[in-house]
Image 1 (cartoon, rainbow, N blue to C red):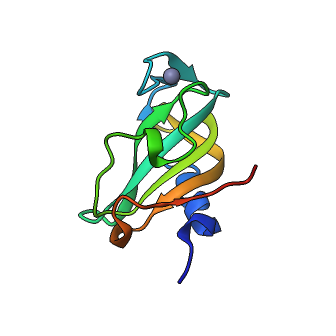
Image 2 (tube, rainbow, N blue to C red; image 1 turned 90 degrees about the vertical axis):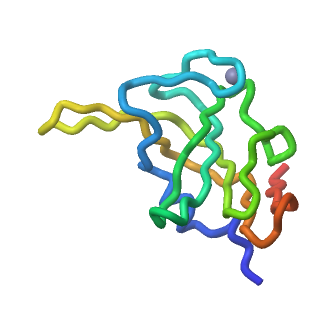
Length: 125
Ligand SMILES: [Zn+2]
């Protein structure tokens, strides 16, 4: 079976995926403001209805989970991933809209839909 956690394509998908409009957001856990350049953790799940990934949670460097153990609002039955990365701002010169994205994304854990609460955890240290 394939280990989606090591799928470089998923890291590429998460890179550049819009997180929030504007230039900053709040940590899901402690509500501290995180902004461009900050290291963060991101949680994303697969939205089958639209056929794409959605980043629903952003964590500051102090709160970012290393695996699904601390994540209490998991959605069972859909593929999910936790990743670490840095925030960047992408702006559209045409519309003048700015949006937060993640870059330098490294996957920490993924959970295919058919594995329920038991996801893969990547241990690199
Ligand atoms: Zn936090």
